[in-house]
Length: 412
Image (cartoon, rainbow, N blue to C red; front, top):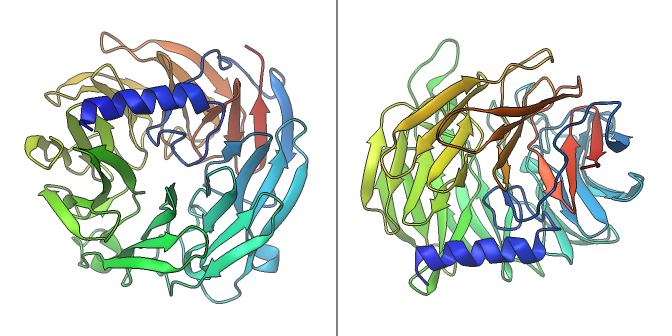
């Protein structure tokens, strides 16, 4: 299957199963909703179907399957790392399952534990809890299996989300001294293969140690090319493609920085990989041949969305940018100014039709037109609660997670 036919297949899949949002980037792992008619405007007083309190801060994005919404959540008071299931209709908690981990476990205060989003195939829910392991649960909250993969240790914590594909679960375990890509059997959690990832140190910066300035927080992306699957992963210094069956590296394209946050972006005829915090950006053809490269970019932590040959992404300072994929040319930039206490953006944008949705750290969700001609803001929706999670669009609703609560936004 060529990359163009893959794109069409992904789009059709989203249209068929768009009511579900089974992983961090949705049904097609590209941040694109195949639905139409999601709410454009809301506030705490307008179009809120329900609001469910959460027991603490968290950066992970919810996932949705049928009548259930699942969120990973740390509960510091009891040293728990959990998955919580909510009833989509009412917002009531249905169950909460997880593991207890009282050991010292470093992370940055802005990145609470359980920052990796869960993943589901409609039968099981898989969550990565960092050093506390990987666990799978059925839709009633019963633990199916649990794996201790060893110590995950980095001063900034972790954030890569697991990916379910076929009968396997894939995970980018890192960053830190122990960094590897692993495939687990979906039914048992058994290790099928494990591929160690490059280790190194970055450039000294401010008060950070060089070893802190190196690593990847990106989530894997599975694509099909020429009749076989490939697993793409953005890593320090290179975009790499692996064989999902064996873990063997098939090709890599060098040109990324020491720190990598966004996941690879697959488009017809091109794959785009960003580094973190304004580092290099690389565009290659399927197979790794370079199209273009820039030493600096606006991308920071979030992963871009694509429409009609153009990328839309937002940097850490809240600057939105439209970029032509074929050439890397920047078409426009615009500042997203909210009403909350912070305009910084860590979340990834989501596309529905010709609208881009993105939430900033102050809890403002912006909706703007996906057009290369000019920036057009369609709505600015304040909640007044801090957040680093991405927007979810499912079954006609917008699902939002702040540090304080889970929201279902309805009304069209």
